[in-house]
Amino acid sequence: MIRLMLVVISGAGFLMLAGTVPGLVQNPAPEPTIKEEDTVPPDETSLGEVQPAQTVELTADLAKKAIDAFVLVRDKYADSSIYQYETLEEFVEKTEEGKKFDADIKSFGFASVGEWNIAISTVGLTYTAVSDGPEYDVAAQIEEIKADMTIAKDMKDRMIASLSSLIPSANNTQVIAELMKDQIYKEKLQLLAEEE
Image (cartoon, rainbow, N blue to C red; front, side, top):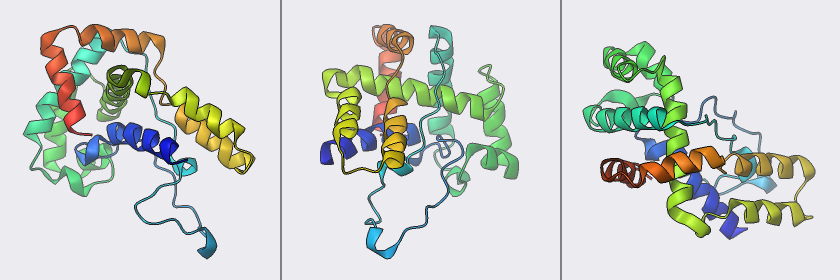
């Protein structure tokens, strides 16, 4: 089970971009009621509590726009109050700085920060899978969960759904693999890895 958690933490690190862009996972799960005997150490999250990643099918243009927007906001808003808000939408709604952030994202052709958020999350998730290669074997982790008879069915279903969402589509894998051949975008994609 330790290996399983490492894969999830790796994937979640990308989905959350280490706090640089809060709210990358839209609509986080409500805090579960935990019985005293089920208490989990504070630094560990049960895979069954991790919401499936929201992703989109990428095109080269969409991926480039998402990456370019990330590069801009990564530096421009590094010292902003963005970290004080649970979601990008809240930051945009409640602050003047957020309204500027929103305008910057929209200047790349995104209808909203939420739309960009899902696009850059998809790019980051796919980049992790492509760059990790065979080490990114989520399918094997899913098979381990399916074979584990000690996990309750509802928890097993949630765990499988969370892990399945971390497997990028063949199209997204191809788009990111092609971008990694472009030296400019290869360097920009590496910035995503720094945020992990």
